[in-house]
Every structure is written in C-alpha cells, then in structure tokens.
View 1: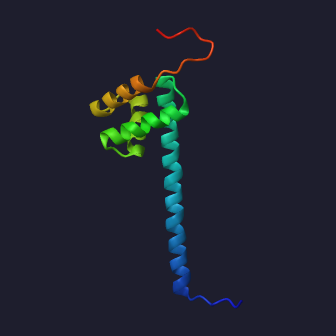
View 2 (view 1 turned 45 degrees about the horizontal axis):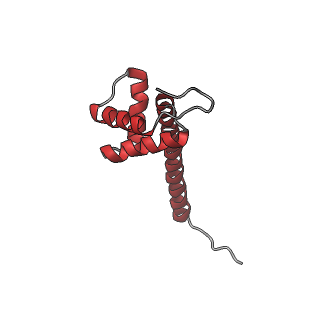
View 3 (view 1 turned 180 degrees about the vertical axis):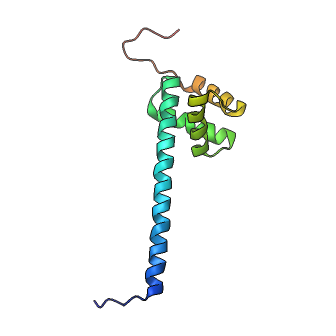
Length: 111
C-alpha cells in the first residue's frame, strides 16, 4: 500500500493534536492521584474498604453538586489545614455514618 505524502500543515496539525492529548493524559493522571489520596483519607476516617471510600466520595460529589475531583481536593486540603466547607463536611459526616465503620474480622463488636 502506497503511503500518501504529508505536507507541513498535516504534520503541524498532528503535533498539536498529540500535544493536546498529552496534556489531557497528564491532567487525568494528576486527577486520579488526587482522587486516590482522598479515598485513602475517607477509608481511614470511616474505617471502611477502599470500594466503600470510593462510594462515599462519589456520593458527596453527587449530593453537593461539586465535581468529584474538587471534592477530593477539598478533603486533602482539610487533611492539611482542618478547613472544610460546612456543606461538604456535613455530607461527608452523614455518609461516613451511613457507610461505616466495617467490623474487623475477629475484633470485638463495635459499641
């Protein structure tokens, strides 16, 4: 199969498209890291599994109409500063009460 020659405009467009894709991938990786860290905070707070931590984080986002990544960032800021909006804090507390804590196998019952 013969290869169709490309002109300088085609190559430039391809470079711009690839640069845009790289930027999107970098943003996705950074966002994923923030969400994973926030799940870790929720897991520790609620003594729950990572899957349940994900559910709590997702539900806080849905119930407060704040993007998941932003909720995750707010939780991480709260971990460093102790500051969190009342709306997010209230929703997080309610969901932690509803979803956790897990009973550790072999541990005495929680009171």
